[in-house]
Length: 555
Image (cartoon, rainbow, N blue to C red):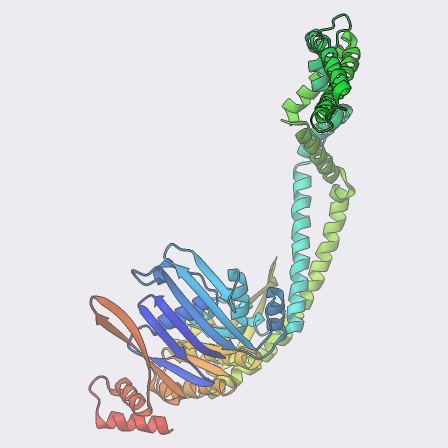
């Protein structure tokens, strides 16, 4: 049940807050006052497509927030668990639409994608608008309307068929591609095989092949490096010269050791520091000597390195720019070659798999068609019972099936047929029914839905178009009957429908300071009588109109 809705800066609405209860609530007002704008706001709250034109002129954003109480259901429980929300029986949905086109959605204060808002909203409220008549007039929508009557067992059958159709479609496209492009496949396999052999034969080792570049630099500049290392070595430790750095440090170390016992604080610390420097330099000298011995120029090694670098450079130019990219390219080629040459992609294996999928599709399509046949019989019975209550007791309703191409929805074309009077024969609903009949047929279908669905709220937006008199009263009774087991919000211009409602809100449009604003007020019984009298007699309210309005309210 929708307990409360708050709408701010939406179209011509400044700020509106409405509280609802169970039963039937009617929204009335002149055309253009903003009744349908409230329904548009509800649709936006439930996840419909946003338009920047909805944001009130001069405002930064539009805000819609709704408080819902709901009965526990497996679908709602599953969605809330997915979102990590507590199943408390209460939900607050919030939608903000910014003037720059962005929008945000929240469920119980938690930011969430629009898809989650749509999923939850679809389980809470069912809105039937004037566009539903257009769907009824279009046979292309009849299949989806019929499927809405399906229970969980039907949904399981339809889902299994859809999955089978997806497999069938994928295999069919793959088989056609293989047959059409056999030559291209063979050419691609040759290219991949050559590239794989070329890269694999290089036997790339990232660590070793990265190090050879440094080794080539060392070999190419060996003489220069040795010259500098020798100079450094002899500067530190030349046995032929007493002035070598290491010799001088050794002499200073010995001198300080000789006097260190005279002052254990000052001289001993200096002796310790210079000893550390000496041994450090001694290690450096040993390391220099070792590297000088190792750094021998080898022309054959340099030639081998140059050849290896040439191979790597060619591979990097073709498949690089780095060796890691070359290895990644090799891996992708191996995967693609596996897909092209594997058993699953051969014409024979694909043909076998496709024929199996085709047989499975036919079998699942038959199950789906049989389930729809059973469902159609129940729909016909339900709709005929509802039509009888709407003064179309002589009308007959039928769901016609015709073979169609396989699609994600099966291989059937569905169209609703009706016989409005006995002996006239069944004719397509879209070409036969008048406006008033369409309203009653749509309400009959929606009434059947209401008995099957577990929606918190049902909204009827002028579903009574084109009717009057006793038919209007029958529609009023039908809508009120639906509200007795839940909550119905309704927009109507029919006094019979307005009078039977439990609560009436009046939407008015006011102008002040060059601004137009919609306002909402909950009417008392006397105010309701006045509004109904206006519907009956216009602005010139007569005593007879007031009396008739009172009679409608009492009835």
